Image (cartoon, rainbow, N blue to C red; front, side, top):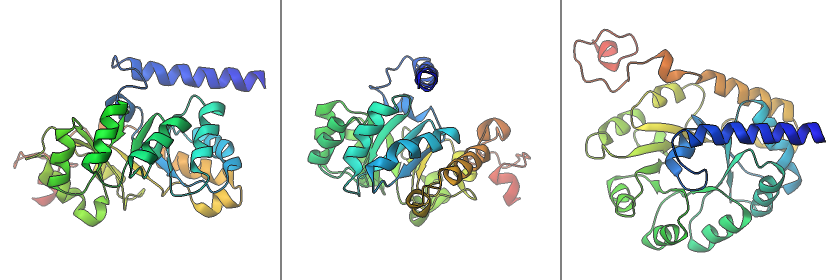
Length: 262
């Protein structure tokens, strides 16, 4: 038990060092949180007793942060348990749609939150709480409203249904100041293409954790799939330094969209 506790403290120290290098406090900046990992696994927990072994399995595969979706009755209790038992993980709450859900998520111990859309009432509550938050957007009006409340980091969802890479390239023009965390239709086959875009910082998704693996306590399968997904995007920007949104019509980089189109 002592060995496990020391391991958790070491993980917490490593996570904090990554965030502190940007001079942000872990609890104050969504920008810093999004730099920790290119993937934030989203999970639905039906039984709060699955919370700790699930987080352990995700961490063993390389996850540094998770989003607990609020679609289940056990979600808030699961967040509370994870906060107490797994303090090294960066813990978010997803599907926050109202100020009441926001307050419940904060009280349970969530460090950041996401929403499937945004309203003035919700964004005002986020502003009042000074809570790291990714407002959901699916078009220009949503993005403009989020920007009015100071949110330059936004959750674009469902990205695959809203034009995917082509839509994100378009938004680089009018919304040059916005960086996205994408969600909806992301998988191991297409995530690299998205992460190469200069306005995409990370992806939130449920493709890593399958419901039947949680139900059947197949924690080794969770770790295996998590490791595969994180290995798949390892050093994606370093390995393919030339962005897909290059505007040079004469570019010959094999990873460039201009070169592929030529």
